[in-house]
Length: 534
Image (tube, rainbow, N blue to C red):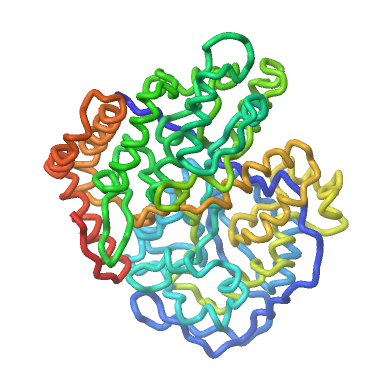
């Protein structure tokens, strides 16, 4: 069957919330003369930094990200003054950025700084376009290095070298949610483990939680796809298979220097056994595997299911705000299941959607890499981050409680206030700003955002590793087979006694070949020497 697909809008919650209050912050050093002579990716020495204290010209290219560049922007002029630079910024429309950048990359003539999609830099590094900045971060960008988690730097290394600066993304996106009012009506507590979860689902299905005298509810349902709804159950067995049925399946984990493909693992089989038990107990919506996303949302809004897992915004925004669920079902209340469902081995967790949203690369031909790194370092300080996100204090915003002045709101609405806000990330400050919001809608959203961020997150070991040709060739057939057999095992159309036969067929359909190619690519890019447990 054709797997349901998600179209996810990128939401910047920080931009909609309050500004960070001014506080004592680190001051970036004024870019000045330096004796450093960083090496390019090819090993050649970059030109020495000029000795003048005049503003340093820096060129930057980035997707517009819904922003507009204005040369008379007082905010960017203040950034230039503080960092002692003169910026020359080129912004292309998001949907046209990659094609235009490819042309520049092919010519070898790129700006000093390139803002790229998460792992897009991997396509260009071997062309010698970017500078290896590994040895120079401590000296010229200490704030930048300190304010980004070590794992982000490690994730974005290429063949053991650091060619890019990562931009952090919140990796936890999805939340298992439950009808809190149903728990109250049935005198049940929030489930904390799989046994309690099973009992709650049975009560939601058979004990008339909505008190309408009809057998018209199910414990477990969906709002988009069954893969999401099953996620915390797989997480309770210590794995995160991701989107079952995706065209290029490889989700795997690393243990004892070997990579294990999840779809044929013992943990995956154990999770399926539990899911089959729920199916046999008739606590799952029987349309679970076939219902379309819009129909599933309507069913949830009409109060027919008591649990699902989906993007953090589904319950507070789509169901409650957009579909007016509380008008349809007065008293309906969704709560995150937190801290999660624990499995027989004491594990609990959710899928990580990856914490690298973008990267910055410095051209190997940049004339003053020292000044570039110092500029980016300033942008990472409290003062620099606040300025590039919210503008001039007293002009564009005031305090956390009242973030934007009328002038600031007008500038934000006209999309020219913060064109540089997507250059350097500070997830800690973003979280602080979001949590400080007094807006009732944002406060409700934060319950789900914060829950999504606090689960244990399982990250695919191949996160950031590009597709291999074998993965492209064999992936669709393997994915189709994985999904087909998952459904058959759960619904009983195939007995789990055929598990070994499933594993053998999975390998023959190309699963083993594509995994071998991924492990080879992993070792190459990570400068590692891991094996394949298959």
